[in-house]
Length: 280
Image (tube, rainbow, N blue to C red):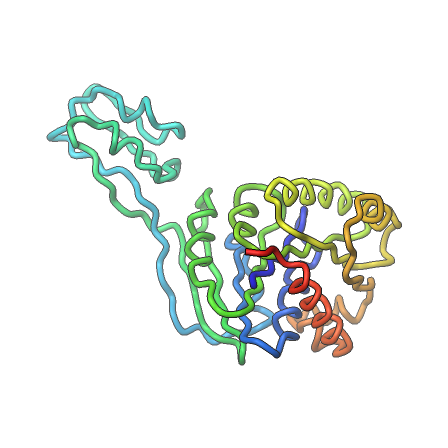
């Protein structure tokens, strides 16, 4: 079973929930995969021992100028403007390349081959009984999905928790794809409600089952709960706006270690996810 922990906005407490969920499940082997490759932070709470580091590379065009006739077909088929054909040379803008390979196919002179460009790394290890993996996108890179796909290839075992990037853009869709259940973490504020609505519409489009966890309950108003009732979205857990939780979180202490009572509550959330998971 793969459970993704997502949210429509950043700072709602996805990592708080994901790490505590992983630490609470003790009846099956558990894995935590941090797909927030632009800013991974689950390792701060689990403190894993990293056993393996691998580079993540994407294909980029390599032009053989001795074969190139500068016809411009490669630039014409590139939807991302990663190639500029000049009278005497071809310029490749590697940071714009999405690695689709269209230019290789379009070149009738066979002057373009595929090279490799490192865009990030994946790190794998263990944190006690928990198998751990996360990805790190290189500074300055614009595309997270290649690193997310690479780190998701580490997914294995009976129960995997995925810490998803914030928002509803391409990295989020790539992270939740093929999940069996999604937990949407939100907060009771106008921003929290607005972004929750976007996340719900995204999951409806992907046809994935989901439920809501409200973090910092008591901070704002009841609009999030009213929305969930109106949409018949189950709220499976409320985490209060508590100074002790905030202080522990700021020190990198998981929720279940700050207040052990949450361990059983997280087990109940995991059981709910199992019961309502997508049938494969």
